[in-house]
Length: 110
Image (cartoon, rainbow, N blue to C red; front, side, top):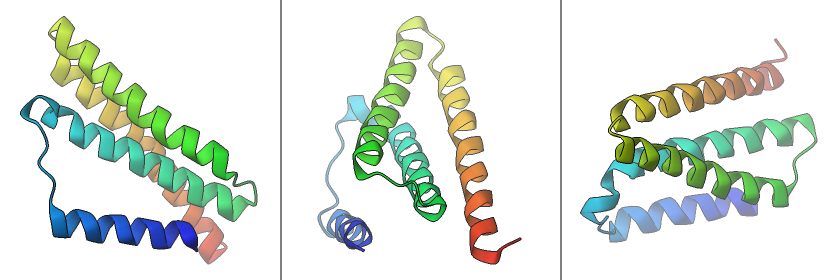
């Protein structure tokens, strides 16, 4: 419950204050958001499976964001940023849809 409350407070504060993202970091923001969503849906799935651990969630959340941004940064430096960005989005998207499918099975017992 505290995690959901923290998420809601964070979203509301983000909508109210609308922080400026530096121009150099703008290409990494969508990747970071998708990586964070992957961690959140993975945590929800783990919670429904009865194996949720808050420490694992925090490490997963930050490491997903860092690794995804690092891959895109490396791609930018190598001149293949768009391809690696697309690859990261596809992989994380597959993981998100897989986790959502498992969550749906838990909720609807199907």
